[in-house]
Length: 558
Image (cartoon, rainbow, N blue to C red):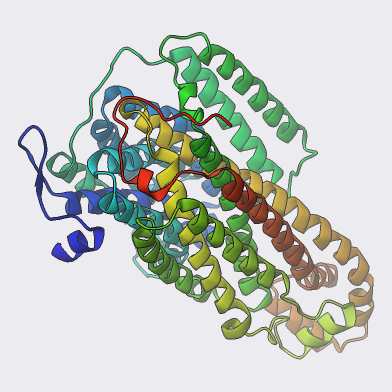
């Protein structure tokens, strides 16, 4: 435990104003365990989807709701969760969120039908929306401004950044275990059940190591909560549906959800201007640096999604990696973002956040550009020749020289982004607003991620489909000239049952890299847009981050 305390820069136990001993190192452990659970649960079930579908007899469309349901509840309820922490006590809401998350995980792990599983995923999202903003606010209110808070935020940011990659690895490993709970292949259930003891123990220990904040019951803005939550749910649902190739931007429900979301959010802002105790106090946005941090934290994770989404598909579909091996391919991301966050936490004491985050965005932009240069055989004849000889299309792509360097560079860059922007986003927020400030930051990331994935998926699908139409006829003619035994072998290898399906699958595999590389380029522009915001508007000095403003905001006009 002393190692963690030293890492965070905390001088062991401290005594707060009430005379109570504070174990800051253990407090950070609890907060970061909760954040890691919340983040990795967005990806841990991804690898298990085929097994869940087979075990519970779920269709492909319904399977996507295992991922979408969690993201929808999480993103839509974050703002409300943050405000509830401000009003009813952040430790209480944090513990409630962990308990809800653990119970929902138990229900999901024991589910015998899709209705219970999908309900459990939504309930997990609710628990995450309560726990995550409370966790971030607890760091702000528990750790004093300066080096110890900077280092605490570094650990928090590292957990947030590494969680997606850890989820892929852990999901692959747990899914492969032979546990025989109900059926022979029940390893997927462990991706849910693993959260139960962790969440309950963390909730049980929270009163010992975390200090409760002031509560202000009776000040909940019910009309604003209803309009804001419904608006965010509709917006996140519409963006998620737009990013799904089965629906897209032209689907009537996508359009209806987006329009409803915008209208409800307009209604929400109208309500907020009129109530005495708004769910979202607009003073949160009056600080220019904080507002810039919120906008940047919407754009930058949106760009990062292009790496996790498209690169994971590229590694599995094109290079032929197994799901578990693909998860380990992202392990350097987790390692490098922890290294980066550790270094940046020290630099934040001496260098202005504009320069740290600005350089980080440029590093991440360079990494995305590197991914956009990945190339594989994409002509119809080249695709057919490669697969007919038993090769993967990406057999000439070297993980060590063409992927690993850019994964590492991306992690180092994003570590340099997350730490200073998290600091500037919640710095000098009034004590009574720290929960909703954390909720706004998390909401920006979730909405930005959904928007980024929708835009990047649209770009990727457009170029993939265009290329499919070019090479499919050539592949079809080539297949008709192959030896029937070779064709049968290809059909068995790619798990298709007809020559037409084989033609479509080969055309998709040959075209996906074209769509992915174009999506990576769009990610570059999103990252550069976030970089411009950081360089132009992030004007807080590092000396100021080492201070607290207990009562008033330092407003920057201009």
